Length: 301
Image 1 (cartoon, one colour):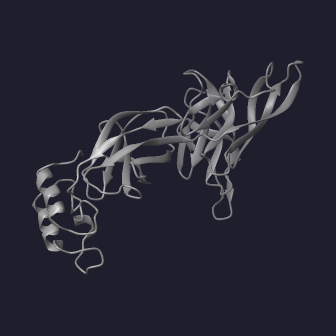
Image 2 (tube, one colour):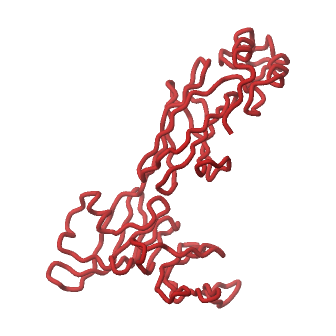
Image 3 (cartoon, rainbow, N blue to C red):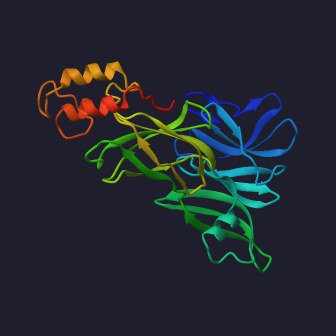
């Protein structure tokens, strides 16, 4: 790989693993795809982003393969999984045969074709566009062109904010974690509608994850083993109110902060939005009652 800053340098060579061909790059040159060999000598597809190299899996456990093209932002990779033919890799699904994608979306025009490999791939709006080499129904080598929709894996559900007058426009923090972990893989913010519904688009690979949801002065709830199918996932919750200071428990610190704002209304200098637990614009006896009812409660990790 040649750059104006570093000149010419090997793309990747570590021990017995090395890149043999670099066949595609993103527009910024940060991501490179191609094929190389590992210690076993098998041909493997790889993707290199910055200094990190990942060997891409084939469609089956023993498949080898080659990556020939990458979309402008690196979210889709096209190539071949040997001996299974044209293949697409993306972060949500991992490797999929192009044929299975086209069949899933009920595409027309490829019946009787052998789709050998993808040599070009891009994304235009909500559509992935690929071209490549194949064998047509007349047993002739021929180029093909195909399109299919961009993956939209949506996490959605209903989050009920207890003891609150109007949920519309309220923001929640969503963390997606490995099952059993408290460390987020990724974090999203979402806004609720009037009945607490939310929806966010994710790029999580297919699998099971824990989904943790927290509102500003509500305790965190973690839903375990949520299945991300490749198109959708769902997590519902009901959040306990009273966490004025945001430490994920209802305790004496919350009493202190509510007391400091007691008797104030929206627009007053000492008004504290987080202490207005019922959202009626005034910190009063109603908010004190909510905190007292939930005192001692602790949210999920």
